Amino acid sequence: MLKKEDNKIENIAKKACEITDVSLWGVDFSANKGGILRIFIEKNDNTNVTIDDCEKTSKQLSILLDIEDPIPYKYSLEVSSPGLNRKLFNKSQYSLYHGKNIKINLYRMMGEYKRVFGILVDNDDNLCKVKLNDDQILNIPFSNIDKAYVNLIDDNTGKKGSKNKLNKILNLL
Image (cartoon, rainbow, N blue to C red; front, side):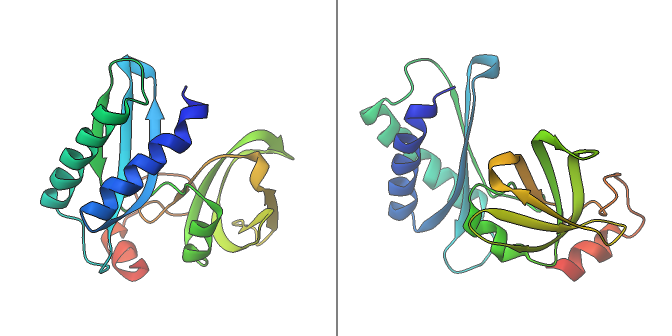
């Protein structure tokens, strides 16, 4: 992966977003299958991201990436909205979703848990607090979080296919 280049890529993405009047939600790079650079954007006016927004940002980003050339091999660029099942990229994003369903993949087991499903209760600079189905509060150090997603589609059991998916989504928005 490009750990030392991640900050450079993020800065380039921020420039492209500023030019196209959108906000950067996150950057994800996967070296699998030749490399995929995924850029997630949001509108500054809190309206929905459109295909046109993605296209404009992608074009601007392509120009900047060609100039800076932070990735030394072939890759594909994808620009999209974070979606309803959005990945959380930094600690400040957690505070936007207190009271919402969350799915967290852990680096190391915490008791019996390697993957956590629950309600995001609170967070600070060091911990993310999740209420589990049995009302237990699990204090998860950010240093142990591999990936976290605001889970607006699934119920907090971790099983896909809720009967009332549309109603749940509409109530959470």
